[in-house]
Amino acid sequence: MILRLACLVARRAGWLSRRLGRGGGTTVPGVVLLRLRPNAVAELGAQLKHGAILVSATNGKTTTTRLIVAAAEALGLRVVTNAEGSNLERGVATALLLGTGDGPADLAVLEVDEAALPAVTRALQPRALVLMNLFRDQLDRYGELDTLVDLWRDLLDDPTAVTESCTLVLNADDPNLADLGRSRSNVVWFGIDDASHALTERAHAADATRCRQCGHAISHDVVLLGHLGHWHCTNGDAQRPAPTVRATAIALAADGQAITVAIDDSPLTMRSGLAGLHNSYNLTSAVAATYALPGIHGHRAEAARAIAATPPAFGRGETVVVNGRTLNLLLAKNPTGVNQNIRTVLSGAEPVHVLALLNDRTADGKDVSWIWDVDWEPLNDRLASLTLSGERAWDLALRFRYGGFDMDKLAVEPEVPAALDRAIAATPAGETLHALPTYTAMLDLRAELTRRGLVDEYWSEP
Image (tube, rainbow, N blue to C red):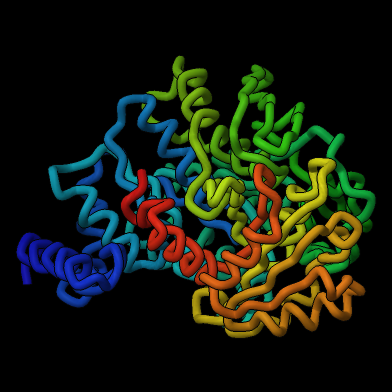
């Protein structure tokens, strides 16, 4: 079937999906299109004036993609993106299909699933790859972390996928990504120089502890987030690359942060509504990615202002007012991500109220044993109320029981509507309830908020 007719059929399938209430049509059009035209991603990508920027990571790819889109649009570019977070090849196909419906776009900025990255990269031959971090996640799908590292190494070694003109934007603070960028040209390194938010020690569940060159231990002078920080091989075979783009000063607050990012030694200071050190990385990586934007020279300040003004993506620091309480949604899908969210939750001085939701669907990972590697214990002294929900709520309850938590402060409500009501009732008016859901649990929670008329469907938001 010719591309034009296949696109027409696929768009109609998406319309029908929305009409029947089966979702937002974020994947069905791509499924249909790829069935009719297996090379549709490459064919549609070829119509982009300036090609594509692909963003991949375990944590932060949705937020960072959103930030880069804002910067590109501030430069006057017409951008195609998968804002709803559908990041497998079918989701990328849907974004390209719908984004080019009114004519060719200037640029695609797309988040891509870690395992789907090779196929999408080979199809689009992007102008830039933004690779932010790799943490242990969905072990039943990805396998051990080394599997993904090796997959990405093979991709970067493939000149038919990653051409000489492709800019690699890599996190210098992640030892695995630093090894991937070793001896490669056209790399823009980013990282956090400000050591004022360093942890006292590396988390016990840290993922990169051995040098990939020689197998000796990796030592950290500064531990910032999981295994991210200022590191070196104890045998002297590798060390953190000097970042081209680096966060030199970070002031964190409960409602955001002030961050100064030096790019080629020129400082850019931004005030962002994105809270937490994980978002400091997202902001820094987005600034680094502007190297790859067409027409960026002379307009870096405008791009930085657009990045700073971008609100959180759905479920990633998004806040919703519910019955006079502020509900703070913090996606929590792996040990490093949850640990960072706990750190953010505890950044204030007040007692904390928490709603934790655990599902085990395919998008979450069927294996939920990772909850035992989360450092939940810092919550204990400050916890005022804790409500557990989701399909594996009782697994969470067992974890908290073994963690020494006061079980009188804990309630288990597997059904999301009842859990939300109970957690809100346990939170005094005017205070904040922090929700820590896995991916599909976050969608369940937002669906309930949508049913109550408090938020729009996630696929209809800008």
